Amino acid sequence: MSTFDYDLFVIGGGSGGVRAARVAAGETGAKVALAEEDRYGGTCVIRGCVPKKLMVFASEYNEMPSLARSYGWDIPDGSFDWQPFTVKLNAELDRLEGIYRSLLKNSGVESFDARATLKDAHTVSLSNGKEVTAKHILIATGGRPVRPNLPGAELGIVSDDIFHLPELPKSVLIVGGGYIACEFACILHGLGVKVTQYYRGEQILRGFDNEARGMIADSMIARGIDLRLGVNVEQMEMANGTKPAGYVPGQGPTKIVNTQGTEETYDLVLFATGRNPNSNDMGLEALGIGMGRGGAIEVNDYSQTAVPSVYAIGDVTDRVNLTPVAIREGMAFVETVFRGNPTPVDHDLIASAVFTQPEMGTVGLSEEAARAQEEIEVYASSFKPMMTAFAGAQEKVLMKLVVSKATRKVLGCHIVAPGAGEMIQLAGIAVKMGATKEDFDRTVAVHPTMSEEIVTMRTPTRTG
Ligand code: NDP
Image (cartoon, rainbow, N blue to C red; front, side, top):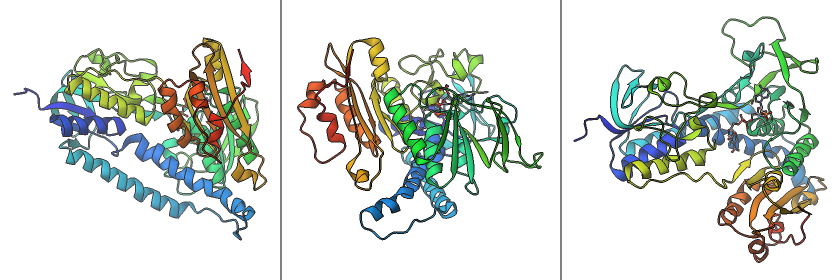
């Protein structure tokens, strides 16, 4: 008989925590409880990937009437109405949250709608006053957006807030050049908002393949996004005087001064300036759990902290901050702790997509990172895709392979194209399997598609 109330207590009801809890309870018979202080589903379902992707779909209709007209349809331009969309969006999020709750319940997990902190290596204190013990504790509390430290930053909103706007602004300034900034620049532009984006560096999407980054930046500018590089916000204030009582960020136009000394006014300022692990005030330092940059919980290959009974997965560990990775880490934790099969998480060659317009799908090394490592061949093809070329559009797509000269293995695959997220999932299997350029070459093309170029590029564009 266990002396603990539970075999496992999970803190955080997002993708990683829910998966670990329900697999441990449902498939290994462990006695499991989970605490969530906010909504079940976490960042991905409630304020991230899912509502974002629905907004991407909504925004993509912007270009469809003119495309349809060029194919002979008699369709007028339409306009977008935020209210009915958000009613449907919220209903969908409610439905998904309900599914998350019932997944837990049906697996036999007891849930607490409460904030949880650690009292000691086996005791969790809940904000409802309860204290419970567990043999193992899993922290899966995710991350949260951070605002930059500048005067008036509290006047701007962060990505969490975007889904709750009562109405769309006429103009927005988006600060940042990462996934969230670029995706929302494209989404809001598509929904009819006048978008300005400031990025402090030389080119958006730092860390991705340079050629792909450049193409996305060019496409964003060509679509009408006012993308400005090498500029940042220095200070902000309400354009119409002081903040009213009960002010919420984003209410009323904001005046900013930028690092070039220019004063500008926007209806809304959105900070997409990164996310920090959600590990504050949980009692972790006092227990001797190591915390890294921004509060990232330090864990070993098995997601175990310095306190052997306490594990952490997902964004709170700041390894690879993506939902499917948190889920993998949760599954590996259950395998290690509840099935006696120590399983490290494989963080190598994870494919991902940036849902800009056009999308980017990427797996493996950028051309620059690969060249720094070894001699390479680059195969790149940039062309106007059939569907939009027919309509007279100038926008190009990019299919690119980065190949090791020595082993012939494909080290990186980068796609900029409509649907690139879908394409890279499949290319990712080949790259993960260690496919060589010759493996790609002997695969017969699917014609006529954009992605057939990935198996028909014969001559390197660059070597060395
Ligand atoms: P990122 O870390 O990707 O980007 C943050 C951006 O903000 C960078 O451009 C950074 O600039 C800039 N920045 C940071 N601090 C400041 C500052 N003080 N002033 C001005 N700019 C600043 O974070 P995101 O918030 O975009 O996304 C967080 C994570 O969420 C991503 O890393 C990703 O893992 C995940 N995500 C994944 C998505 C997907 O899979 N499609 C979608 C959305 C999020 P610099 O480059 O100079 O550091």
